[in-house]
Each structure stands twice: as structure tokens, then as C-alpha cells.
Image (cartoon, rainbow, N blue to C red; front, side, top):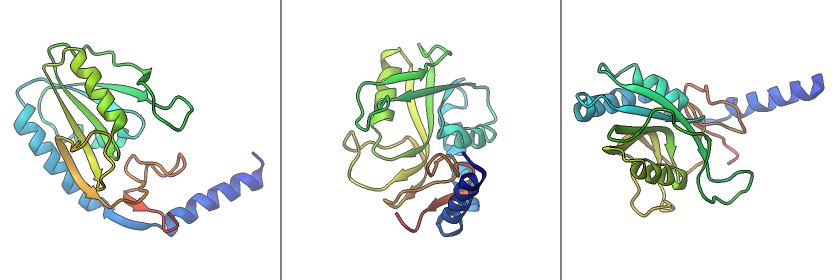
Length: 190
């Protein structure tokens, strides 16, 4: 990449952020994480659960959520995809499979967003087949639409609902960038 093209890319990405609609503020995200943590503590605080962060999107949500949980837990991460370079999902492919065994454990899968949920549904099936004592899901946002991969698919712990727009920030990316944006944003042009 030449200097001018990297400067153009930087300006382009900055322009996306400068012109984005802020759908959910950082303060609203923090409040949602507090509520999620209280619910998770109520349900799992005495179970010594294992939390699996779904990479890459779940990284920021997991980090902020776990610091709010004042009970013993284990943390691992998973990186799964159903695409493998294609645009249509197929069977689940582990880029990084779980290291902490799930058998007889209370498992919590943490991700940034529940959109259509096909990959999340496949991860849940995997966890159940691995013998988890229980499997629950925690997502920062649920995108409101009727295109869920499994009818009625909902997260057990959900911070916020978001409108059916392309969103980025707090773990969700825009063309690989802006996962670090402090809140949930939507580009004006999409």
C-alpha cells in the first residue's frame, strides 16, 4: 500500500465514523452490561461456569462483561466460521477450537451481536454434543428482524436490541475497522 492509498483508507474510515449515526451510546452500553452481569450472577454465580468468547467480535463484550462478574469462572475463546471463504454458510469450521473441556460444565457463549444466528446456533449444538451441563448465550445486541436462522432464536442474556441496520462498534466491525468505537453506530450510507 502506498502512502497516499493508506492515507486515503484512513480518511475513508474516519469519514465513516464522522458521519455515522450513534444508535447506542457508551453509557447505554455500560448500563446494559451491568444488567447482563447481574442476571448472569443470579443464574450462574454458584456454578463455576466457563465462558467462551466468540472471536473476533465477542472480544470487547467479553472483556467488559467478565470484569463485572465477582465469582469464580474460567475463560476460553473459540473462533468458528461457517463460511471458509464463501458467502454461504456450510458446516461449522473451527479456526480455533475450545481448549477448556465442556463436558459437565455450565457453558456461556459470549458474542457481540445476534443477527441471523446461524453460526451461534451451530456453536450451541456443538456445546450440547460435547456434554455441557448447560449452555447459555450472552450477546451485547440482538438485531431486530425476522430472519433468524432458527425461528425464535434469542440470547439468554442480551444487553440491547438494535434496529435492522448494518452496525459497528463495541466489537462489531466496519470493513475490519472500528471494533473499538465507544458505542454502537450505523453508517449513514447503508
